[in-house]
Image (cartoon, rainbow, N blue to C red):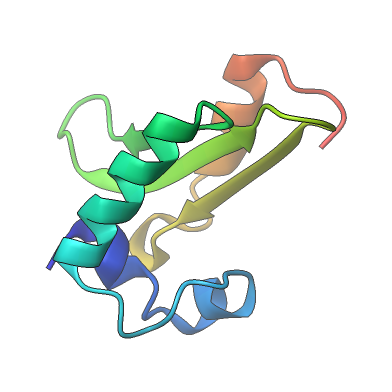
Length: 94
C-alpha cells in the first residue's frame, strides 16, 4: 500500500479529508497523475532530512483563492513538522 493511502486510515486525518479509508496504492497513483495533469494543485512529501523517513505531505491549490493543506503522520506529530514547513515556505496567513 502506498504511503498516502495508508495515511488516510488515521483517525485524525480522517476528520479532515474526503479521501476514502479504502483508498489503495493503485487509486493513490491514479489520483497523483490526475492532480499533476490539472495544473491546479501542487503537492510535496515531507521527509526527515537525516533518515529520509516520510513525515507527512503538504500542498496548495493554485486556482482561485490560494488554499494550503498538510498532514503529518502520527509518529511525527508534536515535533514541529508542519510549523517548519510553513516557516520554510514563508507562509503567513494560514
